Image 1 (spheres, helix red, strand yellow):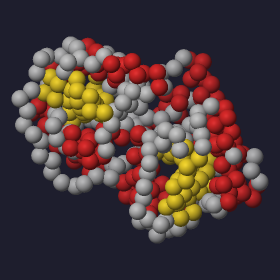
Image 2 (tube, rainbow, N blue to C red):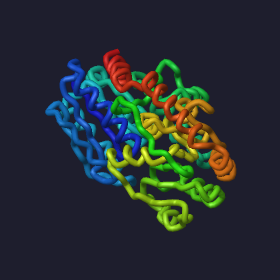
Image 3 (cartoon, one colour):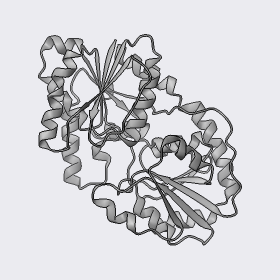
Image 4 (cartoon, rainbow, N blue to C red):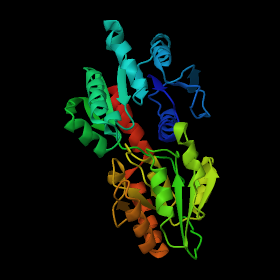
Amino acid sequence: MIVVHLGEYVSGGVATYLKTLITEQIADPKIDKIYLLMSQHKSQKLHFDSDKVEVMYYDYRRNAKGVLKLLMLWRKIVALHADVVHLHSSFAGLMRVRYLFARPSLRRHIKIVYCAHGWSFSRKVSPWKQQVYVMLERALAFKNIRIINISQSEQRIALSKGFDPRRMTVIDNAITYEPGVANKTPHQGKNFLFVGRFDRQKGFDVLLKAAELVNPDIHFKVVGAPVLDDEAMANRYPDNVESLGWLNAEQVAAAYDDVDALIIPSRWEGFGLVALEAMSQHTAVIASRVGGLQDIVVDGETGMFFTSEDFRELASLLNDTTPELLGAMGKRGYQRLVKHYDPKKMERQIYELYAE
């Protein structure tokens, strides 16, 4: 079987997902060759130590001309003799238009699998935009296209918008992690971590507002950087917030040793892979009650929830909790990760979908 993964801006959670999935697919003897196509602009550099994988970059910007260039990749995909084309995110999902008008012989041979990695219509946008997104996604969810929802939350949202349940399946995300026991550094105060883009979706502004209201013994470390029009947000740090910039995977893992919990103040989130990363480091998760985060975090057991955008509630929660309570939650979070989010299980379920 030859598998082609097509992404647009492959970074953040999508990059982690592809890194995990392709690493497992390399070990799958039923898959002969894997191609990964992604934009050379705003994509992370992914490397796989295997001749079975070939990473290919294409010239692209998110505009009308860029979308046309993306659609032209159909010829390259056909030339690669793909058996399965796995599309990642909404813009890459537009390739379904080319598939719709492809020769019947190609449609019989090539299987299309689509994962939105967070439905566009689940974002906090105006009602008319949501309706446009719903209409577009439903129009492209035609026969022979299989849809992977990355969480039960995503499945529920799609069903509520009238998507055909026969076309969809839920396959939970997973991450690769090192088994073992994390030894947390004892803390005098309370220390919290944020990992992600400094933008509206990730709720970075909510975190900064909460940081201005918490007790003096509370400190924050933030890993990431601003994007697009959110650069001004990066210049308004309270004194108890330390910016570490972007860190590599090893550095982020080390950062978890110095904190009591990860904070995820997102306004919307299809899944939230960063929550699994925290759990792999025996770290509790304090998250806004949105999207797939509600499926990952068990409130009061592996972490705690607060109302999305309510920075006062977040500040109050941080003031009232203790490092001892968060430490116990972190240990239970690791146990939940091992039980429910196995990368080998994810790859096996996705291959079964490919082979249908």
